[in-house]
Length: 131
Image 1 (tube, rainbow, N blue to C red):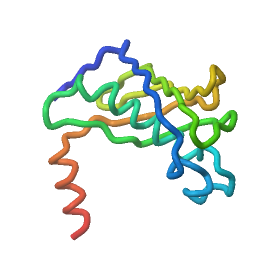
Image 2 (cartoon, one colour):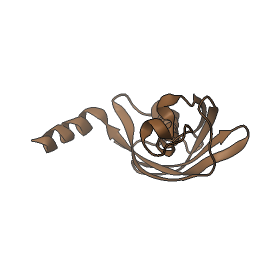
Image 3 (tube, one colour):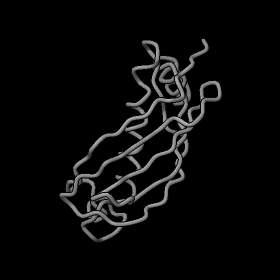
Image 4 (cartoon, one colour):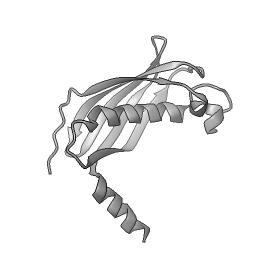
């Protein structure tokens, strides 16, 4: 099945930096600021949600690559704005540009790659690989 997504797809979402998103909690540092892994998770979720409604029933996307720069810190309690835009589609591969902002300052940016998969077939292959 060939799935074509409008390349103008973009989304902007806000996320609250809670304890579970801090470097101290995640073990990626020992300061109570937004952890890089949490920022990346926000970016991946934004991309997932940007395209999900454009996919046929039974399909979703999975993240396969991130190339992100964490440019500045944001404290616990901050509201982070994450923006994503689909830049290119090559068959099932989706390439996004992502950014994270806090107080009108860019705190992260980069590229994220996702693949379109059929959920049931994806999980079946995983199950078979476990045997």
